[in-house]
Image 1 (cartoon, rainbow, N blue to C red):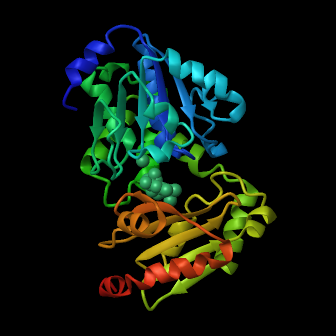
Image 2 (cartoon, protein in one colour; image 1 turned 180 degrees about the vertical axis):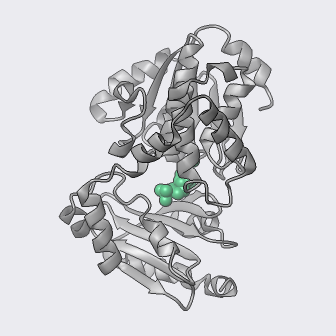
Length: 338
Ligand code: 5GP
Ligand code: MN
């Protein structure tokens, strides 16, 4: 971070701070928000986390879950006031304004400084202070670094450690993706040395499935999976009826895409899900195919080299064809990795 001394001076007095994660925040976005919030509160600031949308129930164990405000039209007046009275906004785990809709309007008009901490590809133009590293495995890794930059290492307690660990653990696929550097393991070890129970965090995040989520997984594997061995691609197509049948909740499709990616010979996987108001996609790849570029080029999305997302416009009945047409444009490239 270039202007860290200026930021340090700014934070040397108690301030009113707002933290926002991206839409449908995952364990990295929310863990980073909680971890940073707890740390900043220890430093005497008052902090409000505002989430642009709801988030999975299996993240409700995080320390100050009851204090998060989730954007809803009926909260608008309250949120207007919080932004108005705030001295700084922290944007965590996103680099494009559209990723925090409908809170983006507060940032475009914001008169005070914005600090961005993130590891996504993008153009983080809105930030006055940036800790931005696309090689970081998780935003939580950068939160750990940020606390270090503010010389707050000794303030990391077990609740903060658990939040940072949750982000590291999930964004690295439980420490297995290529992004899992020795530094990530070193941070995890430091957190465990503080007395943090890593098994507890794994249990809270991964052993907290609803029955419906598992039944939907079974249904999806059996009935909704399309495998294109000729180009090394596979995808799940889930309709509104599929979601309704299993009483779909936010987070219930998390991890699904990885089952398609785990098939022998498959290097590129996707989920295409009709949420009713939008058709959302998740993309994953192994190796040299950039799904961030694929999402940006075809589906108004973005993300990381091997993990990204986007949306498909139009009717759900045409979604699979649109996706397959996009894949066909990259068939040569995809086949070269087989
Ligand atoms: P997921 O598939 O887990 O929802 O998202 C994978 C990665 O891509 C995450 O890092 C997420 O932040 C990013 N991502 C998902 N959807 C979008 C999108 O519509 N636009 C951009 N820029 N990034 C996305
Ligand atoms: Mn992340």
